[in-house]
Structure formats: structure tokens, C-alpha cells
Image 1 (tube, helix red, strand yellow):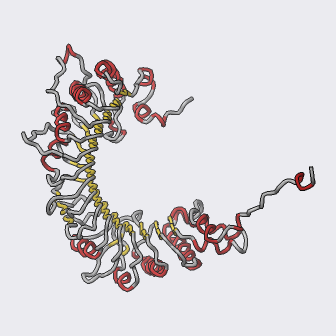
Image 2 (image 1 turned 90 degrees about the vertical axis):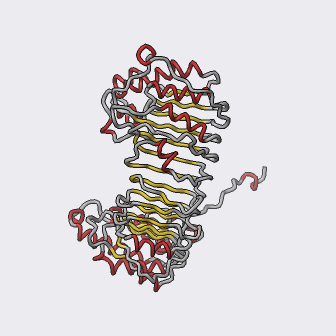
Length: 489
């Protein structure tokens, strides 16, 4: 064997520093800006690498020392935060910035500094801009967003913008944001008129999110020439009406029950509603939900069940609905509803593939016993040829719960899985509303499901989440509902 054969081949040593600058920049850009800046002390070559960071995310509490006197002096902390953000902008190369996010306790007193940062965003052609000042309360003295400044700058590169706790007063002749596709407003001071000016100016807008904007009373999106596809409105407590753009495909809403006024047939395929003060989910589905939803495929509805719905004889049908999720709360001890009424949903949605029913009920509701509650009711056969997945949570073994589950099990010809969970999931209220004895209701639900549903399960599709008596007797309700919180000793 010659010397060449005996010589071990050595792999070439590739040092981190030898990587191309664009790759190093991409790696550094994954670090928080504060940590990225610290790499400048590694060597003379590293001194400028961080200055090409493409995601400039400034978070108030991360940019300041955790200990020291500044933590007790808000004005000094704000001054230090501004100084550090400005220092980064001054040292940054200005190349390829994709995102600028400033999240801190800033207000109109800081306007000069923020305006300079906006100039930097314009000069670097930033695509994604976030001003999140919502930790600053009360709402007096909010930063007045400089629309005139934007009108004078090139904002054609801006595609996404999020504004929190600012004041919006766009001039009537405002012309900018011509290519903006995403806009989210949170806790902003904006009137109906100013919102209309803003929306009219955003002709390419595809997503609009409005959260906790307390001055809005009416929102109209019907004039956006079919560009707006996704609308999300949440906790705008003075809002009385939403006029929908007929090009919408996704709608999310959380708040009190208000009219949804479409100009005509909607293209909506996905609707998520979390309603306050609604009294019956079935009534909303068949009466209040806009009837002009011929393409609806996914419907998620959360509300309190306070009364039994009186449904029209010839209720509407959702011919394209494939996924239905109901999150129902029963906050009163005296139940006025009958869950077997929900069987009509199988007829109303003949192409339904996935059905979720998540419930929560307070204590004092009894599990089903034939000697106490009579024989189980059954409805005429109603075969369903598409329902494959069913998930029912908050199943505590009440008679109408059992009757509905049996109806679905018997009539779903292609059912693959029926998951029954006695514990409440998505419909769960705040943890303080859970009574200390609710765990025994979960045990009732498990036992009823095993006794009656398993007996009817001829295709082995029923999956009941187990609840053990030992757990109920030894663990708190909180630990039962959130088992990951259990501390094992």
C-alpha cells in the first residue's frame, strides 16, 4: 500500500466567516436586532454585517436593560428606547429592508423621531411596516399618523401595514398606499369618515383587520372593486352595521349582533363569527346570517344559547358547506334549548364533511337515566352521504346530547371518526366559572357515551376520551381540563 493510499483525505475547512455576505446577512437577520448588533464585536469583518439586517423589529422591553433605575422612570426609558432605535437606523446600510416594526410606549411627543424613521422606511423601500404603541394609555396624546408625509414620499413599495394606538386623520385628497395589500388597525382613533377616506385610497387592499377601534359606528367596504378578500372586525363596541364587499371570500367578526349588509350575492367561502348577546345559534344561522351565501364552505359560530330557536319550516340550505364548527355556551341553570333540534343541520348541509360541536354547561345538569328521563327520542331516518368527521366536546351525558349524537351516528353512512370528549374545549368560559364538582360531570359523560354510543357503534368509529374516577377525585377541574398543567410528584 503506497503513501498516497495511506494518507487520510482531509475535508476542506469551511469557516463561518468565509460564507458569502448575503448568506451571513440572511442568518443574522433571523436574530433579534439587539443580538444581531452584538455580533459587531467579533471582528472588523463582522462589524458591518449586522447593518444589513432585513427585519428591523424594535420591541420596547427587549431594547432596554432589565435592571436599573430606568425601569422605574418611564420618560427616561422612552428616551433611551428612542436613542437606540435611532442609532440602529443611522448605522444601517439601508439595503434590502423587508420589515420595520416599532413596538413601544411612544406618543405624539415623539413625532419628530417617528417621522424620521418613516423617512428611513421610504428610502429603503420597506414592504412591511408596524407601529405598535398600544401599551400607552389613556388614548389622549396618541401619535398622529403623518399622512401628508406619506403623500410626499414614495410609498409604492409598502405592501403591509399595522398600526396600533395611533390617531388617523387622512386628508380628503390623500393619495398614497397605492399597492398596499394588508392593513390592520388596533385601538386606533379613527372616525367613520376617516376610515372611508383611508379605504377608498387603498385600491389593492386584500386584507383589512379592525380591532377595538372605539369611534367606528359604520363600516362600508362595498366599493373596493372586488380587491378585498378577507375582512376581520373585532371588539368595535360602537359599530352598528357592516356593509360587505361582494368580492369577500373570508369574514371574521367578534362583537355584538349587528346587521351584515351585502350589496348582492357574496363569494364568501369562510365565515367565523363570535357573537355577544346572540340568544340562539340556530336562529342566527337560518335567520340572521346573510342568505346570499351560495358558496359558503366553512362556518364557525360562537355564541351563548339562551333560548330555543323557532325555525322557519322551509329553512335555507347551505349546498357547499363542508365544515361546520359550533362553540356554544349555556350560561344559565335553566335550560330552554333542545340539542336534538341541531339534527336539522344534516339536512341543511347535505355536503357537510366535518361537524364540530363544542359545548359548556354549568353544574346541576343530570346525566341521562331512563327511569328518570324516559325513553330516548329518535327522529325519522335522515341519511347523510358525506359526513366523515364528528367532534363533540362538553358531552356530559344529558339526554338531548345523547339523542343528537345517536342520530348523527345512525345516519352518517360514511362516518370515519366520532370523537366524544366529556371535557369542554373551545366553548370553555374563563376558568373562574368552572365549579369544583364539574369533574364528576365529565365522568358522567364518559360513562353515558360508553354505555349507549359504544353499543350503537357497529363500524368502530366512536372514540371516547377517557375520564377516570381517580383523576376526578384527586385533581382540580383546572388540571382535568388542562392536563399539561399537572405537576407530577
